[in-house]
Amino acid sequence: MGKNVLLVDDSSTMRKIVGRSLRQAGIEFDNIFEAADGIEALEILEKEKVDIVLSDINMPNMDGISFLREKATRDNMKGIPVLMISTETGDDIIGEAKALGAVGAIKKPFTPDKVNEVLGPLL
Amino acid sequence: MNEKVMNVGQAIIEGTQDVFSTMLMVELEAGEPIEGHGGEVDSNVTSMLGLGKDIRGMLAVHCPEAVAKDITGTFLGMKVEELDEDVKDAIGEIANMIAGNLKIFFQEHDKDVALAIPTSVVGKSFRTSGMFGAQRVAVPFSMNGATFLVELKYMEVI
Image (cartoon, rainbow over all chains, first blue to last red; front, side, top):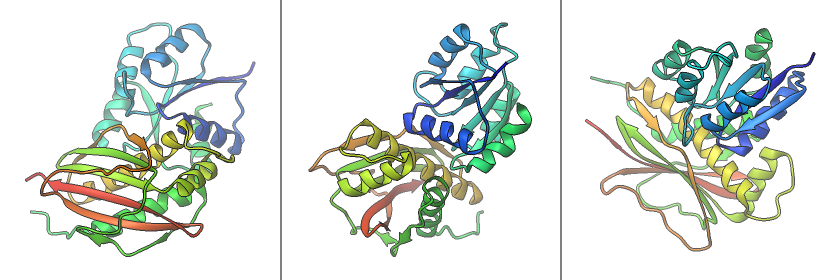
């Protein structure tokens, strides 16, 4: 059975670039779902089977940290891993994300090789 | 006390070149950093992003129409015909990633910086202005023979 990924970023450009980087890295998903903020991401996670989430941190409406915090309260999505992809690299923010359940982080800008290096072992 | 001297112009050059070489596979040619006034380009697309905490100010990427289309087309791998939402979004994301690299630079100088979400403006005749008393460093870059400008107006919070 194939795997599904959810890309969360307020930039549609960045969602396209992440999707393209996954293909260039040779990582295939059956379905790539997209959300522009944490609220949309939670709505998708309520409806769809998602195996992993790749999420930005700085977003309007509900940012990546608030998304992680809210997701952790919902039993039906607690176990879905979230990998942060962000310009944020500070130990405080990344540390907070990991404390809330994020399994790792990729800094923007990134290469397909970096995506493969970090994401590959998680699949 | 932080004894390291901040070379903001060089940080803009390295941070911008890193974004373009990594995400667009383009090696940018940088001009000399300009401190204070000068170096403005006739911008049709400007993406701005606020900085807060220890460094307050605004990073802006100013692009003439042709450059904005070129950057967006190279970024997305498609031909761009007009200054649409894709262009505003792409230049905004470029500004976001440059600001992310500058945040790391300032962290290396013991300055904690918070980044806002980018805003893009499209038009034919507009100007941007920052805080009174802020320092300004701007760097022109050349991409495929055309010039765009990365500008930082900032103030250190003591």
